[in-house]
Image 1 (cartoon, rainbow, N blue to C red):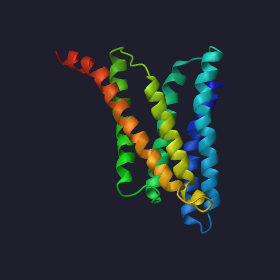
Image 2: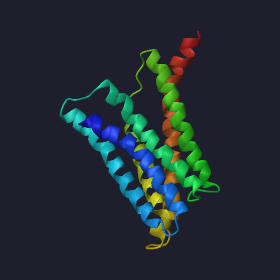
Image 3: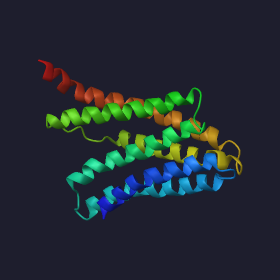
Image 4: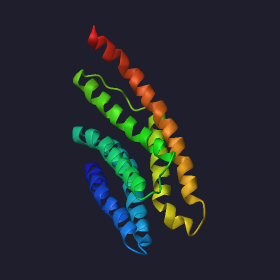
Length: 189
């Protein structure tokens, strides 16, 4: 069951992207924006439950440990790209999205390298908060233009949350790099 939740999160990514793509093309397609938010929220909730259930039911697996962070990164990255594409994230705020995307690639590469050395870098509590901040910021931004019609300023609030997530992302990225750096330097000797 935990792995099925993770697979579901991976499948949700192209569906969510399609909703955002078509909401931009169709006149009056804001309902697709709300559908994208619903898909995203369900996918984000599965992020909590897949790990919780795996531990509670003692069903932790190698594929689950590998796919869970990939599913998170796919969900956030695809959403950020679609939000940049439709102009929800633009101007200076693109830098916040870029920091998030670059950190995720850097940490994934670092983890892959360290795995070859059989070195594990555990996920910190701050990294979990970073993921939560990213998920919340992106969720608010997905609602953005549609939510602004109900409560003006939602997109601006989402952009502020995106910057908070970017700062946490930068810090945790530095933290991972610093933890892995001694193995990188030690490998050169």
